[in-house]
Image (cartoon, rainbow, N blue to C red):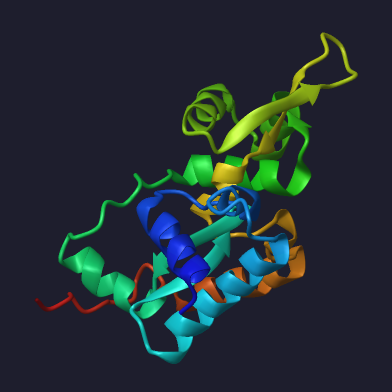
Length: 192
């Protein structure tokens, strides 16, 4: 492995967040953008070819070393990883509306959801998943909300274009609903 790839690996390992290629380039001022890209490819290949338990992932506008999905469950079961607190159903629903319709105002979100979202917006903003992106043209010039790079990182997306399309969501939800037992069906208790 080249010295530049080793340097990038050390920085990515030490960071708790994705690091952009611009930030990685500052590690070695003599390295060109092409050399940084080649070192990242070398690192990715190293992890993939040699069967490592981690992988180089592109998320949130940068790169990060992450656990391979097949090992996540065992690590969680052993309680070895710190997981971010889960989002409530209301938060996920509001976040999805913002992600797909951004920039969007509070009233539009409330119209879609049918409930007040003030506290949910506050919570999502405090977590850094959404931010105020501007003001609308309507009465009172309402605040408009959009997702942040932390949102992309949280959901392991490189960009918003990786969000599932509406038709893909409908199919996934249909499969999820068909897998959910009816209320009168008996479901065996888990053993263990």
